[in-house]
Length: 264
Image (cartoon, rainbow, N blue to C red):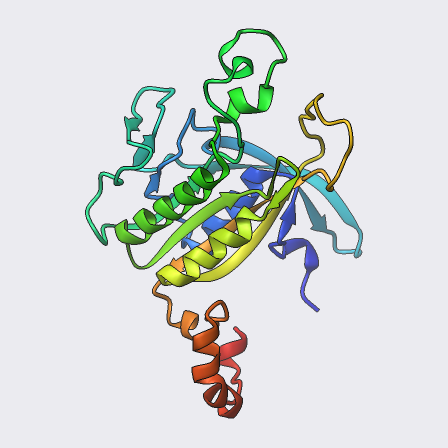
């Protein structure tokens, strides 16, 4: 039986460990070419993670492992915070040619709220902490339009076989559950991406708004890193979002045997 301590797992408390695992598993160990949501570069640098190591006697010990996530070649953001980051328009193109890069990272905002409301523009400590820290969309449909726009742009600039790492989080807004992660997957599939993998980042704590008096949904303590691959042939076998595709190919799918290669 394989050593489970060396298996890359789908769930982690450490987002940098997830990014490292994605680089190793899906990007041939290479740095990402581009990040269009660079901010201050929190994803990149030198980090530590706790790993388990199996001993000769079968016991398992924990130790700290150091690793590096290299800087991307192209750094963009709609509101650059540090030098070396190029400003882009929130509804404009990524300033790269079509089919020009092999990999990229995207981590869009997930907060719903007017950007000019009093709690966003005042300087009161503790006021609208989440919105001020992560920026916001308003009204709700703006977030979905933004996600679709940047998925389209990501597809455009990636080479065939290129990897897009897409971080997202389900959102509760006005008592409505907005499953933005699954919406992103559906849009990505329709564009031509293959949803190759999914990693779940679990938070040990969250910022809690004092305005919430009656809880209606579970508080989100997780977010996703999805790995999308442009024009991967495997997409043709998993295009389950489109009903017309399912109906058209149902008979073919039933008659097509599953091979060992399909299981890899």
